[in-house]
Image 1 (cartoon, rainbow, N blue to C red):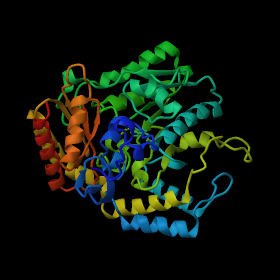
Image 2 (cartoon, rainbow, N blue to C red; image 1 turned 135 degrees about the vertical axis):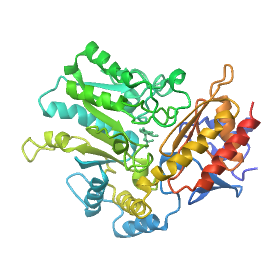
Image 3 (cartoon, rainbow, N blue to C red; image 1 turned 90 degrees about the vertical axis):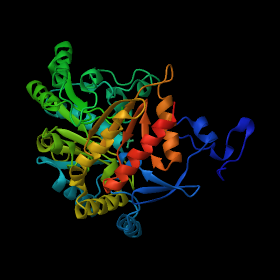
Image 4 (cartoon, rainbow, N blue to C red; image 1 turned 180 degrees about the vertical axis):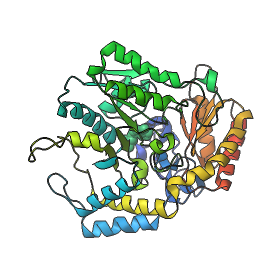
Length: 446
Ligand SMILES: Cc1ncc(COP(=O)(O)O)c(C=O)c1O
């Protein structure tokens, strides 16, 4: 039994009581905890000494794998030199250095970076920027924000308002006003077992025209989408979809925001999803891979034309009344710079492109495994959708998750969809191991 287990009344585990865990069935977990205590390279170690292959890069964030001494040393050096410094009307060199480094790898035109502490903060920052941008241009009627069904944009009130996952919304009142949603792009009937971007569905972008016709373009500030939706179960943009969305935004003067919190930093085999798809948003959000998940941090990348619209007021004006105590945290910047060095040295921002064909072949070899009703992939991401048990959505995938963990593989599940997004340092042998573990486990569940 886990050494942290201290039985309390009615079998609860008192030693685990104090920590209210996020996005977790706390009582279920605490009755049978799964604890990770170490991490190196592609693997975690569990508290009972087992090696667990990381099929999810933590939570889509440890793109360079685990335990890099270089990041540890950079963090330690920064802690020694200066642990914290404020960023409001004060600066510290490492925050400027990191922004410069980020600008170098960003798509052309994204010359400005605003720091946050997480993906959720990046999303709220981007939404606020979009609203303030139109106001700065004298277009204060553009107050509406448009998201997409099945979108995930973190858990701030902005993010859940534009997000489209019912359980993240239904418990939290009315959220932001003035928000609408376009339709999601998932179409199993037409696109099941697509390899890469599905052929069918570019026209779903036209749903934005419906929203424009309903509200009037002059009331809409921005549309936010994940270029590839991750948390809702790996939904890919159909061919031509993002291009069409961009064109409709341009036609109506609406800003396009890409939420690249999971697609940023090499996940698709390109530095960012906008490189992969050849479609540029006006603003894009990042977090996670920004520091390899080591220190919490996010960053919002902004095109010149958006940034510059704020720079017309008198010089002593604060251009954006927004920011966080931890914006540009020096220790996070140190982790981020060391992370970019590792990405560059090992070519990790593009390595996914080399591995993607093997990844695709192997993952699609699960097509005949029990309960599999769809497999989709792009870059080093895969979604495997299972048939649900009658009246128990998510139960089968949860069992697969638990059994995979017991068999030495960490996967993520959402509903009955398995999502895989391993560190980008993976080798073909790891792909083989993931797929074969999943195959065995799928045969063992009912
Ligand atoms: C697309 C997207 N946006 C935002 C977030 C929220 O990031 P965080 O959990 O760091 O707040 C996530 C997290 O998974 C995400 O996938």
